[in-house]
Image (cartoon, rainbow, N blue to C red; front, side, top):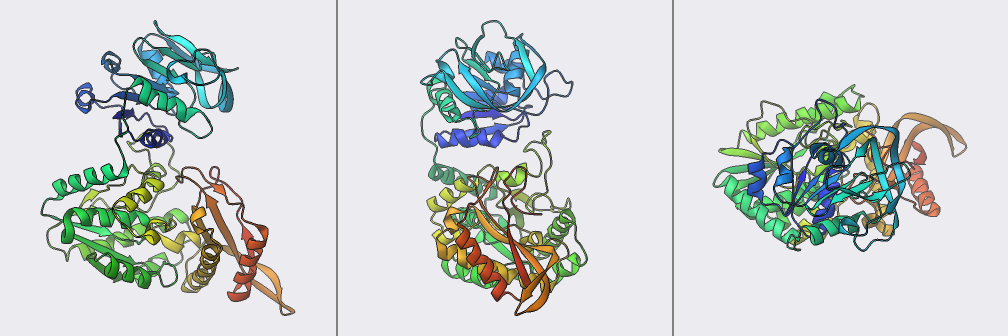
Length: 509
């Protein structure tokens, strides 16, 4: 296995992803992990992640420098390299010229990380500090026009460092570099798959839960569905799923899911109709964060009321994925920026007496789909596009009312029918409609109209960490627009969102 030390970079899980793509298990731990704990894990290699701090700052994160005496191959990335250099007697200073974005990398030693690579490649930089002196035993292995020591190594001790980010797609040969580290330098074997993950996770859940009971808030999305089937496989009827209809779902959503989960998966499910409670609490609320917090609170109030009816319930299971976590706060409380709270991690009250089980917490969506296939989940559930926990509440900009919900449901239903009928559904990460809080003038049947505007959002992505707007054919977009305007009373204008993430987020709120 490969151990990743989290110094607070939002790319940390991309490092984990790249390692897992090599079918090698990896584990992320905070910088405070002890040497004895590292020794117990017996990692074949250690990767020190990047991070937003500067090594010369007093509060900068540091792992025990004794790791460099464990005779374990170590790769430092960006801040991780700077920590390595500083700990081993080199020098790091504020750079005269910061380096962000693409840079041309000149490889001077085609060994170690760069074995099998050419002399030139692109890389992705993101740093404002520079290494001005290497530690004893290190030699420069690559440079850029702005960075003298873009990469360095002490190959005798199997210590390697890079100032760029090999884990991101913007470094085209980065995966090859990481594979060189994992296989050639660390000597790992391809033994980790979703089948092995499922087997280990089911065993762990069975051992943790024993004869006690677990409650799961089932939404019907792929994340909660995989979580439900995984836990059901482990403990059977000791799992009770609670489906809370918050009144913010898509058209006929509750009825469709009830049929799938009870008839086909034989899960133990309680359905709760709580739409009136959510709509009452949301009346007059327009702020997106306030919406999310209110929905989270009402959900937990309803959930706890149902949980009290289940005797001996000890655990609460959630289908939280890593992108959910990283957009709320760094996995280990690191200094990454809070973008927006997530429904799975932003609204849990301190009074909640149930212990949390999140078996998918460090997986990406595509890994969850592979896991779902490995444990026998139905294809239509595996490939269901992500749907936010707060439902249509975050797709209605402004106040949420029954009338606006009804309008968006009709638009959403028509849009998805067109997307599925065209064959684009599985090609897109997400496709949905957003109801805007403004109206526009239109003409219908020679009469002036003043009605709502709907934005259509369709994006492509691998893991929701980054996303690009889908280049759908203009004729297809025209058909969608005509169908919505002609068939949904109250809409007279449709616009298409052509913004990517970053700088925009996938959902509008």
